[in-house]
Picture (cartoon, rainbow, N blue to C red):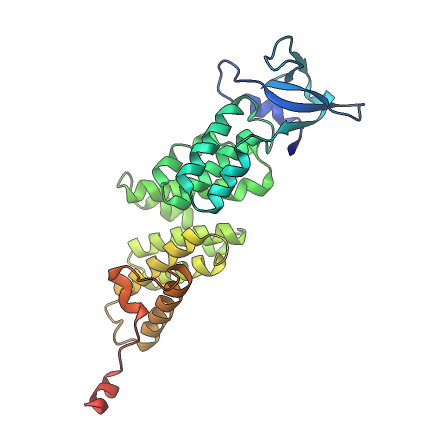
Amino acid sequence: MSRRVPLTFWLSIAWSLLPAGVWAKPISAGLLLEGRDVPEPGFVVGVESGGIRFSASSSGASSRLYPFDRVKRVDLQEPDQWRRALELMHQEKFDEAVRLFDGIAETYRDVRALKDGYGAMAMFHAMECLRRSGNYGGLSDRVALLKEEYLSELYRPQIRMFSFWSALGSYQAGKENVDRLVRLTEDIEDQDLPGDQMAQASYVAGVVREAQGQLSEALSAYHRAFTLNMSRDRPLVRMAMEAALRAYLKDPDLEKNRVRLREAHGLGKVYQALILEGGRPPADIARFSEPMPPEPAEEETAS
C-alpha cells in the first residue's frame, strides 16, 4: 500500500525547517511528473529547497533534482512496521508503538516535508502515544519538532492540543506554575474545537479549575471531557472519570448534598462497569462503586 502525497509551493518552505545533515537511506517511491500518466519507479533521496531529489538506484547514486512544479505526486512505499505500529497503538501498547514510530520517523527523516507522508505521520502518532500513556515530559521534548506545515489541516487541532498536554506535564512536574495553563484554557467552552480536542482541552481545564479551588467548574470540565470522548479515547475517559471522582471527595458538603452524592455514586458505577469491566476501583474512590449511604431520616427509621 502506498501513500499519495500532493505537492504544492509550501514544500520549499517546509524544507527550511528540516535538520541539516547527511541524507538518510533513500526511500522507495513512485514519482509522477507533469504530463505523464504512470509514476516513475525509484527512490526519493531527499527534499531540498529547489525540489525533490530522486534516483533510479537504491543507493541514491546519480540522483536528479525535480522542481516541485514538475511533480504531481509522490507515492511513498509503506514502511514495513507501519501497520504493526498502528495495531500496537490501538491495543494501547504505547511504549512498543512509540519505538516503532520513532524508527519509521528516522527512516523517513529526509522526506518529512512531504505533506502527510510517513515521516511526519510517524512523529504525530508517536506523540499521540505519549499523550495517551501520560508521558507528558516525553511529549514536551517533541512539540517543537513537529511543524504544522508537515501535516494537512485535519491534524492541526491535535497538534495544538499537544501544547496543552506539554504545559500540563510541566505544571505537574513542578517546572512552572499554573499561569500558562490558565491562558490556554481561558474561555475554552467558547472555542471552536472538534469533539476529540474539546474533550482533551476540557480535561486540562478541569485540572486548572481544581488547582484554583473552583470545584464545581472542575467537575463540569471533567464530565464534559469523558462525555465527549466516551468511545474514542479510553485513556482520557479513564483519567477524566477518576479525576472527577477524586474531585467529589474534596467537597466538604458532599454527605449533605444528596444530589451531588448521587452523581458521584452514579459515576462510580459507570466507571467500574465501563472502564474497569467490573474490577475493583482504586481504594480512594472505591466507595463510589458501593450503594449510597441512607439518608439520616432513613437511618433513624431503621433503628
